[in-house]
Each structure stands twice: as structure tokens, then as C-alpha cells.
Image (cartoon, rainbow, N blue to C red):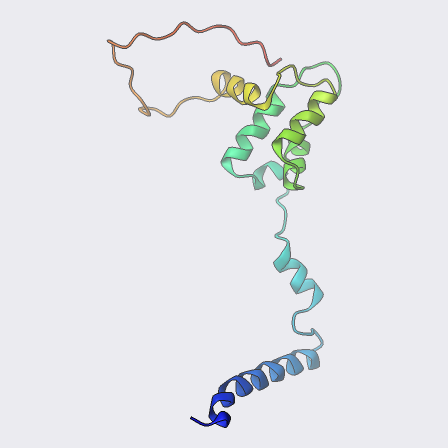
Length: 145
């Protein structure tokens, strides 16, 4: 196979690509206009930031919201969710809220456990307790309001 044949396909592909770029520039948008590029790079945010969270992240946001003390200016659920969507991890969000004296818990795990224990209903038939299994006594948790 000659060198000309080996180079023919890549050269033709490059020419087609460049023709597409030239045509797009003639249309006024460049290869991809800035607005188009921006809309591809960053998805549109929901009106309520909490709606854009995954179910697990939503649970953590709701737990942080519910665990706030009533004294002081509480963070709305939207602010908690927006902090996470802006790239902060949950540990940082927890520490900021703890710094503002809004939370009593020692760590994020306590907040989520408290929330699941007090607010989240288990799925029906997700597990069955057998009568032969003894259950551990429960104790009162005081991490929330």
C-alpha cells in the first residue's frame, strides 16, 4: 500500500472537519457559539436547588435543615442544597453550620442518623422482625430541635 493511500482517509476526514468549521463560522456561530457551549457545559439549575439533588444528597440536606436549633438565623433548605450544588462537600457544609452554632451534633453521621430515626419512615415490608430476635432498647436522641 502506497503512502498516498495511507494518508488519503485522514486527510479527507480533516478536510471535511475544516469545511464544517468554515461553514459554522459563516453562519455566525463559530464551531459552537458561546451560548451553546455554556448550555452544554453547565446544566440549567432547578428553581429550587433541593430539587436538583440526588435522593441521598436530598436526605442529607433535609437532615441538616431539620437538625438546626431554633436560636439564631437558620439556613433555609435552599441554601443548604445550593452549597452542595456549588461544589462544597457535606462535611464543609456541616462545619459552617456548626460554626454558626446552628447544630448540636458532633458530626454529620449523628445528624443523618437522628433524622432517619425520627423522620424517615421505613419502606413497608423492607424487613421483618422475627419474634425470636430480641430487640435492643432504644434511647432518646437529642440532636435536633
